[in-house]
Length: 284
Ligand code: GLU
Image (cartoon, rainbow, N blue to C red; front, side, top):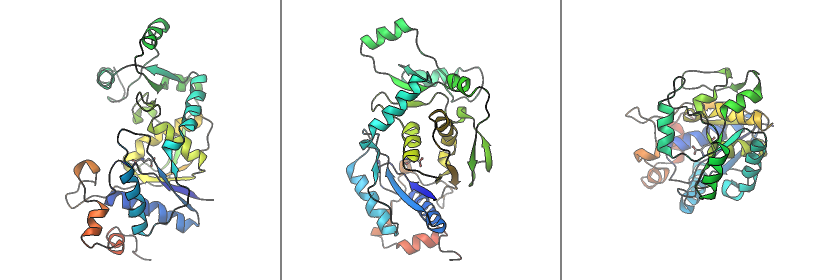
């Protein structure tokens, strides 16, 4: 059974880019006679707001999208992420990282080779770690790529891309977790969990077979596939889709104050107009 999902974070109002992504996944599920799930990715309690979550339901319904209930809200499943983190920690694949964001950026920039933004660290010496823990210093849990590589023992890893990466990547893609940023954070200092871990756990628990999302998350697939292997979870198929761009050629983004679906609705744009603009009804 084909199962896909749309997984927005309630940190702002949805814009055209979200509509395109949600409709792409929804129409794929319909074409396959499969299931379409909605997941609210609200682990970032510092940025998530109830009014944005309410608006997601309203905007998607307005677009004509139907989803299964109950909706999975990540903030209600922190135990699942803790269990996955504990399993990785038991397997010596994680370490505590006390560094600040600035220190990480500096360490990555001075790395002798590899991707400029890829950070690789290591656990602190036990006595220093014990001292910092005793001092109550906050820490994040990171995935150790060195340990993960050892665990894989040279076994080549791939994921299946049925859509396309930003450089046309398609088919069986060799996993390069450095593309996802190196030793990614699995549990943030402030909220105790982080994006990659939560997504991988949820997709598996929800039985998602097809991950349909924008190309802005293509790099994330690399470390997410690695986490699936390390956690012994099934491999979903990926379909990264192109990013919708505005008349200025730039992609729609919250930070650029892209016109929201609510704004469009308020000025009389209909869901049919939007669907046509995005090419959904072509040939139908
Ligand atoms: N919550 C993520 C976002 O809003 C999407 C996660 C995913 O599709 O894997 O960008």
